[in-house]
Amino acid sequence: MEGEARFLAEVEEAARRFRDIPAHLPVKLVSHLDADGLSSCAILVRAMRRSGRLHAVRIVQTLDDQVLRELAREHYAAFLFSDIGSGQLDLVARHLHGRAVFVIDHHPPVAEANGVVLVNPHLFGIGGTCGAAVAFLFARALDPANEDMAHLAIVGLLGDQQQPDGGTLNRGILEVARRAGRIRVARGLRLFGMRSRPLHKALEYSTDPYIPGVSGSESGAIQFLREIGISPKDGAAWRKVVDLGEEEMRALATGIVLRRMDREIPEDILGDVYLIEGEAEDTPLRDAKEFATLLNACGRMDRSAAGIGACLGDGRLRSAALDTLVEYRRSIMSAMRWVERNPEAVRREKGYVLIDAGENIPHSIIGTVASMLSRNREFQPGTLILSMAAHDRHLKLSLRSCGKSPADLGRLMGEISSCIPGAIGGGHASAAGALVPTEQHDTLLHKAHEVLSRVAREERVA
Ligand SMILES: [Mn+2]
Image (cartoon, rainbow, N blue to C red):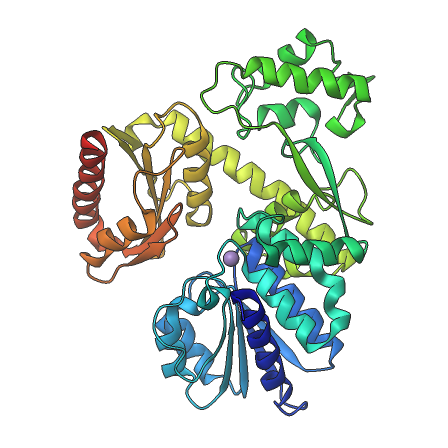
């Protein structure tokens, strides 16, 4: 059997074992804090509700010794982890010994399953997918009626920067979402926030595509619109991209292409957008990619319940989630302004940049700040950005790369943190993070400079 068929058989088997758990026993759902984690969790919550099974939810940023010790004290007979757990199988097995444990995840597994039911496409050579996609397949195996949540798997994929049309597994789920009338794929301008923000703001905030003279500048954005003959206002009201007529839309696309002519990466500014059917045109819930950002915001602002509620269509939680998105954007903008105004906190070295924000930037958004800086073309492609913020006796670190990374960032972060007492670190090839005790600040700086400058040297030799 090929990998995918074997994986799907494994999903069925896991669902069968889950159904064997007596129906009156409540289960604990534990999921990751990001957009993929929250959409995974929403899918599983709906599946539990549908089968009438009692359940409780816990959302975590990391799965460490302390979290697992707390979970072990709870009297659940079964634990269902989603979008997290594959990297901590040993810990999970040790702490939750004797309980029924399911790990529904897509991160590369380390260690043996050890009595845990592990549902992970990596074991079958399938990458490029996400936690919500795996949770969806599991939920569908529990009950085919759960097919009505396929659109949440698409939100998870976009949240994790994966392609809904990449790989047969993802494509299959996309097809289900389309057939269920939950997702419509449209060709359009890939301009983030085009439904929820005024036109000039969407242009100003556009970092991908980056528009020279427009991205990052409100007046530049308004000036650009005037030049291409599009009025940013309709009477007193700011217009949105979705308010533009067909002719204006074409003028806008052409204008952006012309502005970007000298860019080294001519990525397509037109692309597939994934629209969630039944949502109003002008809400961030309409575009699956923006929905993912909304979930991300809820996770980072400590409002996970609002995000999960928005996925499940709860009216009150939906509006709480929308408010949270506004708050989140505000706090990112003020963090970016802080970086701009405090050049002494930004150390530019050959091949890398180190940002030490102390308590001036919330630890929950320092990763987003690093990502935004990595997209701002002020730095050479390949430059590594390491940012850190202090919180609760720890330093939260994020490592990103401008464009294609010269090295596996997860491995670099692992190397840095492995030399520091009490630190944990790791991640993916293109995004990594770590948590370091504050008292190790100087050791950390020393080690970070050592590792990052070595990468920069190797890069120049290569
Ligand atoms: Mn994920």
